[in-house]
Length: 499
Image (cartoon, rainbow, N blue to C red; front, side):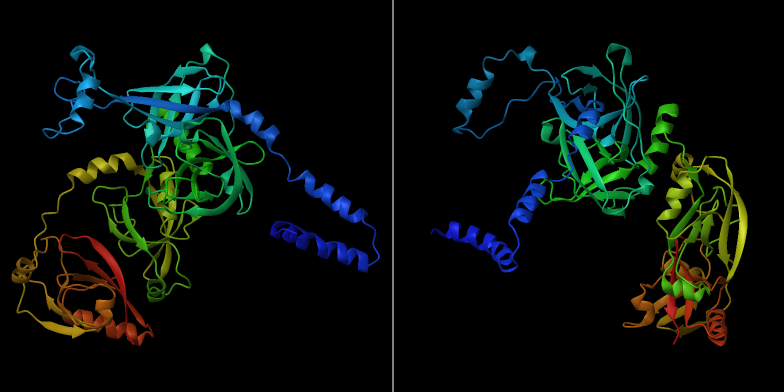
């Protein structure tokens, strides 16, 4: 008996032996074999129904060349054995025929409106394209017009002439209802092969991969490869719950870690691109940072949640003092802000000009303020023209100094401002030395940082710093929340353990 036969016999024998010992008939074995032969439920009908709405996207763009616009001849070392090959290759080509090269790329997309001819894909699939062509499963093709793109979510909306052929569309579904373990199906154009169907499950949700400010990806193990970008991820009802956009792979091929933009995020972006040709996101006008356990404890919060305001943009919607540095935003327009990642997405999805209620924790108390949202796209123009204020620091008396929690401090005067190149609009107590292995060093406090506030109380002298820390200790606080300013005025918060 060969080893392979022994292996097969070993796998079957225990079952037969157990049946014999129990006096059971062989029928149950036959039934079990028939059940196994049926296999899992087929998705063939679903795939067949949806495939016509999924398209391949091909693009071309000029890759340039020399000043004449033609492909330059290769420059090889004198006597190179390859010279003869290139001479033969180029010698019969007329100079006039050597135009600019056309770089082509392939991706995927899907039709969401058959009547209007609207196609959704990824921005990176059509980026910098001179020509965009939508290819259908039956071999037909149509030129596409670009309606708009959003680089922050990597989405693009195209339009084809729907009068030239009958189109099939697919609807968006609710990605928020998808759970880890739910079955999903991807259809796309991997490696330019076209019309490929893969099936898997939702492996994870709310993934952040560092691709943009609104990272909130669905992770799936359905095979996604190069060329699947822009294609749909379907639920088992045939609804698009994600747009495939990225993979993690050391080889460039699928290793079972793919990412899709959730439909809950994509729908609003697509609608705006269709209507306006651009996005119109809400804007609060604040800089934010994570609320750590230490920060939450120092503010008397029961748990670490929300987003802490580390700065307010000059000229922004809340530059009127309605929201202040040190505030922790815990709800926005009725939605709970669980962490710092959620706030930008919630604000961006809100209509420009809408008045919303914002609940903040300020000096240990909850307050609700009304804010009228600006437009995020306008903030980029504002940021490019923002300059430091003209407020000048007042004359200082004799410099006093102190040391606490590993920080050596001095009252900020003109000499220290010049020494540490601190902006004129920064005021507070400057750090002149940080002890190694101290609590301040562990939290990244550096020489030249300026203490602006402690536990949301402004300080301007080392004595005020010491007094404020003693006051917090008297209240039973174990952590002190410090607002620090860098030399150019950027604010951040750190918590220092006082025991």
